[in-house]
View 1 (cartoon, rainbow, N blue to C red):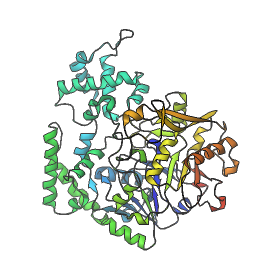
View 2: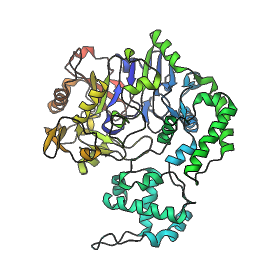
View 3: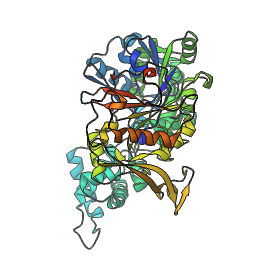
View 4: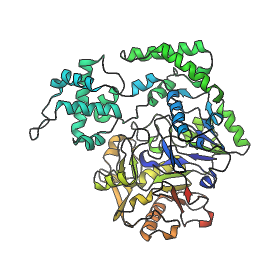
Length: 539
């Protein structure tokens, strides 16, 4: 059994991965089943095979392996137009035979366009922009300070619409518009209020809720994931099984769901008859792929087949254990594997935590080790830190071992995989966050309060950098001493328990986009089952 994370780009990048030996050795040779257990097309990652890049969001990455069966589990929320678009896009890149190898749970919930409108963005032409500017320009014109020229109404509107369209954090908008995050946090709510008052019937519901939160925005992907999970929780959502069942009942439930949204947001646009017609077509397309995946999975495990499970997002985005409310809408810790597939905890063995050698985060929320200087920008540029799904620039900072230790408690890591260590090659010194202080006192817990987390002072250890390229290194003992000391410092701090001493795999992102895989000397190098060149990259 292998348990893994689907996206290697979420905050603190500590994903849950349970794996048997020879994941990289055997992935493209063995008969295997890959499962997606939670989330939707709000997350994604890139897989490189034979020089071709494949982007996956809803699809399990094993779909590119002709010997692999891919399963979308009950915990996933599926936007069918997005699923078929993803299939078509990757098919054009050479993915073949997926029709016979893709299985979809009949219990998975559906993401409708109305969910995405609720959660999504405002669209308008340049003519509409100029019209809006004429309409609200005088209302949003303001002198921000007495020491500098006021920000033009045109820029204020552009900043706000950019936020609505992309969900970029205020820090990202700061780099784009050269306006401070604090000023942007004031501009966006004011402009949104003016838009609502002046032209409510023109502006779609979409991202206004996010924008009106101002600096309390959560930085969501606006893919309709949260609203769909909300429909699921309030028991008025629709599942794949409903779509393939009684058509009259599906239509009744869909009309009820649409009426609920229209009642809350009168400007929401839903062509109910057109949507029903479209989903009748989708029903026939997916019917051959749908089955009870719980029974299928348990039968496969009983037959001794290898199963790789992919989640979505990282552990610190878990709705219960992450930095709530700056989280996703599902459980992306190890527990989500069980609930998202109907998998018994008894079949889970070792758990491999995957963590970058530095820290990244997409969207808003507290980030104690974040770097706002040239080093942060260097990590972003060298690490190609841009979200696969949103194309948003990721925030970067030093490795935060307080977070890694916390997620180890939640997920029970028995070993770690350290990725993208070579991105640190050019740094003369490297810091690692090892403790938090609150009001001058060291705390032994990870704060649940975002007010506390935003005010912690990070205690660092500083290590000398290796200041040379390690991209082509194939053996651990060939790493520079400073690089080995960096790995050792992480191992010494975490002390993850297990039957054997902590195992550390090191994955380096090489120029040809393959990973170079090294093995820590804590275990016999001969025991390493990871190939030295795996067809994956981590961004």
